[in-house]
Length: 468
Image 1 (cartoon, rainbow, N blue to C red):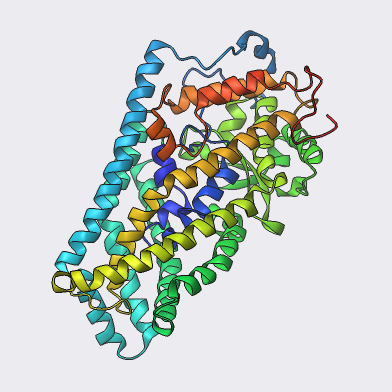
Image 2 (cartoon, one colour):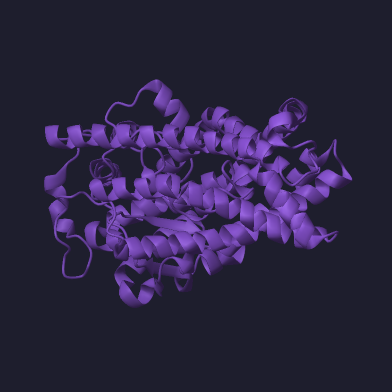
């Protein structure tokens, strides 16, 4: 859970203004295009008692018959650890939220944003772009540095629970890379935001929302080419796992996707993680298949095919444009409500915050304060949409691998069992936690569904992959 909340392009730049938009768009899209997901959206992970890798690097298929899954089960020790892990994750999430709000409040109390703005205006004089180039990095770096302890505590928990092998130096380098990405994107967005505010004080929330749409699409396109390679190494899958490539090509053909083997890659996740994953990222000509090396050493080709089939479902079922559209509509509402709240708060808070108008650089703090609260309030909607599409992708993965892998139901159930064991997924999350934090259905529900979904045996038509 911690890595999904902390790691990745979105979380690394969350202290820039793009996070206001991408928390509901890029974050969800990344979760859907990057993983079959865990209880709250984590990547697939390898169980601690997983069998050694076969000589080919793929777990031996011969062991499958002795691994029949009848439901999601944990040993008493696993259950105890899973509950501890889940509760630690829940606490970290809510503590992080409260810490962020408190940080915004005390920054306003200390009038740091106002002081940053005055310094930027003094150095930049009347040149607005020079002012934002000074103000935005100062503001964003301050936020990122002051939340560094929370970020690192999340990484510490990953190590405590055996989910990370990344050294502090490597983690810190990734943090700095993420900071650099955030500064570039955040500075551009702050510049656009305040340019729109000064030209249309009453409609900025709508015009800025329109401006973010091409930015979101561009970042999705750019991610596999520019951003992902900053954190991991990618090698053509055909050169390392030709048989697995052939198996995934079968799924690609069955799904009707246009992803040639030249766009299938192996990622060296094992240098930092113990987790497993296989995913599709990018859009249009940047679309590619990525399989983590940890997945290759711990899962069978059939299991990897199901994981990939799930990801292929997001593309075939047009989840990406649907999610972007729905989340942008949610963000539009958040922007409007945020606009009303900020306009009401500035006159009341001026005497202690030093901020007297929305067009002042320092008002970004008030805007982020309210949008953080609104994003939290909107979480049940965002996660509800995500869970719906994740369930559809599970169905698609089962259907598209039917006839390609042996016993697709057992194959999918085994993948989810591995996910639950290693992710230490909460065996019985409360309805509140599920509503607020779970971007994917609980693992137990996914195992149960995989075992019982069999339209072919009942003489029924599959929901998505017709004619199978």
